[in-house]
Amino acid sequence: MPPSPDAPLFFVDECLGRRFVGAALEAAGESTVSMPKGTADVEWLERGGMEGWLCLTKDHRLLTRPNELAMLRGARVRVFAVGKKMTGPENARRFVGALPILKRAASAIALSFFARIDPSGDLVVRLEAGERLARPWTFRATAEERQHFGSTA
Image (cartoon, rainbow, N blue to C red; front, side, top):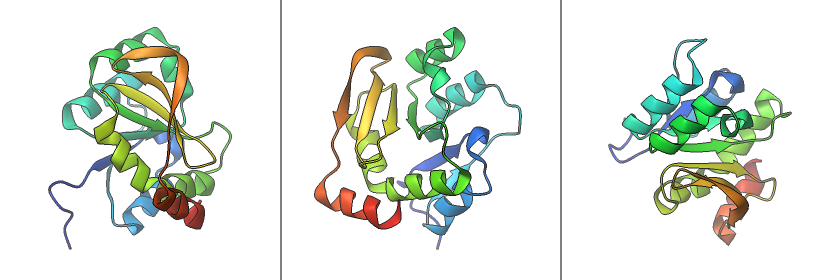
């Protein structure tokens, strides 16, 4: 069955490894996209903002590198990140477990944003409305989202 036209398209950053994360998302019924290996971060950030993708990464340096930070601020992009030291299978479980909260947050948090998926299933928002936050805030998972997260993560 083809995805709904309203269903989000998930961009999988090459640092996550398409083999695990992309395959797990597709097995969960989601649509994914990637870009050729070696594509600069600023390119996929810009395209992700233009296309409305939900961008998945583990690269937290996007918040500290000037060109990437400028693109995060201006491209109206939605970025979700996992921990830096997780394996491909761990990343896949974390993203699939977080699907309900990712979808809810995608329409609730002001563009552009960068949020890390916490081990609890909550999202820690580090950049919102294009501004890096001095004090990150937590987008809390609902009981149902937390249950889904715990059953897969």
